[in-house]
Amino acid sequence: MLKIVVYDTYVVYVLFLSALSFSALRDNRIQLVKSTATELIITISDVQLSDDGEYTCSIFTMPVRTARATVTVLAPAAPGVPGKPVITGFDDAVEEGGKVTLTCTSSGSKPPAKLHWYRDQEEIQGRPDVVESNPDEPTYTVTSELTLTVTRNDNNALITCAVDHPSIANGDKRTEQPLSVLFSPSMSIQPESDLPREGEKFFLQCVGNGNPEPTAFVWRRKDAELPPLAKVDGAFLRFESLNKSDNGVYECQADNGIGMGDITHTLLVQDPTAMSTSSGVDHAVIGGVVAVIVFIMLCLLIVLGRYLIRHKGTYLTHEAKGSDDAPDADTAIINAEGGHSGVDDKKEYFI
Image 1 (cartoon, helix red, strand yellow):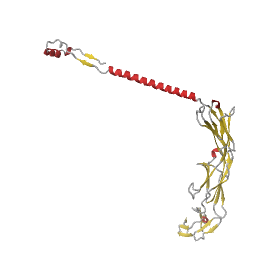
Image 2 (cartoon, one colour):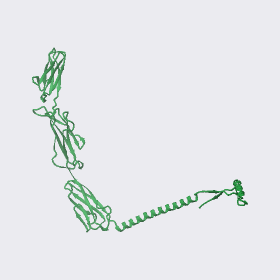
Image 3 (cartoon, rainbow, N blue to C red):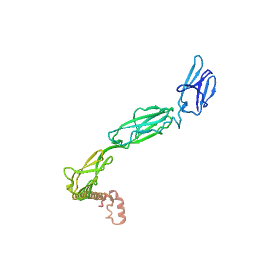
């Protein structure tokens, strides 16, 4: 229900609805609910899009006085709510460096909706919205265009058109369009092992990242023919038994119909005997270092033990002078008790 309130000090009022032309309010849905010397209130029940417009209150005095109010009707689930956007203009994959123009259209909004473009989660700018009135109904169709020069990084990117309108929550109406970009392959070579040994089986794998994926591979050896025991197996170059003569620079070339890519790899075959000798030398060096450390620790323990034994303790003994020459025991005791003051300290060391 819509309520329109008009305040004034006059009593005589006439209300009109102004859309394309003025017309008196003659509709059962419009009711006058209050009329006083200072206030006039009307209500409109079952509001429709046709109720949208400018309402005018005229006071027939000398001179005539008027007041206007504009009413915009938004229907939450009916005409006036923008429809889900539709993206057109992308039917087939586009080659890298080409341009693609996408058109986003949303109909049935009132007031006109606003359209926003996104690449994944980042907003990007399209052309200004074009707004057109829909025939036979007071709603609008909004159109926006986006032109992109695509790169291989745009492959599988999501282009989104989102509708911004007061009648819907942000993000409720959106449409996504994934891009498909055709580009030549970027190449890499993956060896089976980083240390290929003479006499072992070995392979090089050529990997091409492109759209579409490459299916045709060509292997070459720079400045020489491929070894007799090397066999081409699609993206693989297989060696049945590596030899020093297999050393060299190998090139892989791939084609996916859009373009070609190539990459090189330098093969250095290792001598297993030299690698074993080197490994043995390494172990010997490690063993020698450990032995030296153990010897040093034993020497330190021996020196520390001797030091502790030498400084174990000092003992004092006291002997009474003249006690040995006493004729009897009583005299010896008397001589011993009186002779302590003159007794020299004797130190005994135990080793």
